[in-house]
Length: 263
Image 1 (spheres, rainbow, N blue to C red):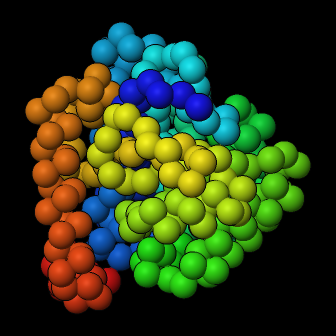
Image 2: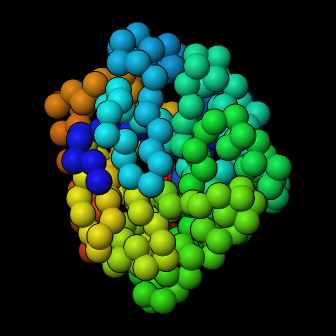
């Protein structure tokens, strides 16, 4: 397994302004992580200007050599194939797309043909759990194993190949989630915790990611890809303050968030 540092940028959907629910999960909280096509284009231009080279792809574990950064897209929204993939491919780039498999074929999400097409075009397809539970880390252990195992098996049936890479839904990572993923056959698991270096948990590689949302400037995305310390530190402090709040108030955190952003 690789011990290199890798800066992984986490995006979600692209949408037209005012149509935030057209791709992926609906609601104000989900909408915070959706960019317009214009904004995403500006991000790609800034990332290309770093001179780092194309983003890496991971197959089973993080690759041993490469440019030192990755592009991820969670939630499996329809914009993955309609808007995101063509923009990456125009630059000769490929990305990782993580699918909440229960939603395949639902309104606003990729269908099975779309999932296959992403892989056929050279993008990596991984699991984002089966049902995208609100708090996967709070589920009973066997249920977490089932979330990973069922999603992996369904994706493998769609793609005709092994699927061993996954990302944690909702940012609710815990060592228990990693152990369950390992039992279900995952070999490389991405959390949403802002970190460059991997950890080994239950025999698998666990890596963090840096969140990009509609408020993030192109220069911020480029700086995160470069591993700029002040940007990493800012995300680290924000992430851990949110994590502490979630642990203290539990389910109330979701209700407070919805009161601010909408359900």
